[in-house]
Image (tube, rainbow, N blue to C red; front, side, top):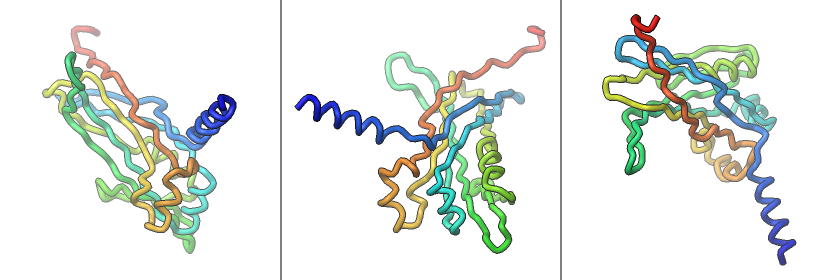
Length: 183
């Protein structure tokens, strides 16, 4: 019985591992007046199934989120501001062009290769937070929005690790601005 349970837990842990991930590599922060400009840089690795879907005309949606958080000692931390960008990736086979469309700003960019598009997507977003309200840290993440897939693809991708691209929430400390007296 213990061997079977051990085998079951081992299989479950293998299923939860995904080689196709998104992770936060670094971030750029700078202050302009009372505004914090935060630009996360992610590393994206997509599976062959996602690449095949894009190359066959399926539109893939990624969401990048950032939340300005305030630490609260006695309860859950408080969200001061929450922002997101939604991106749609599409391939046009007749012109052999990959399109990255930012739904939030209604802007588009064309790319010759999918790798170029993914590189741009991984560093495309810049969030602006009003620091007059305070804030101790930022939580950020990027994920593939499975609910935006065509309805016939949604159920099969729920537990498919090839479609599970999610960086989970990454915590980033806010770098304090350098004042003129410190220099």
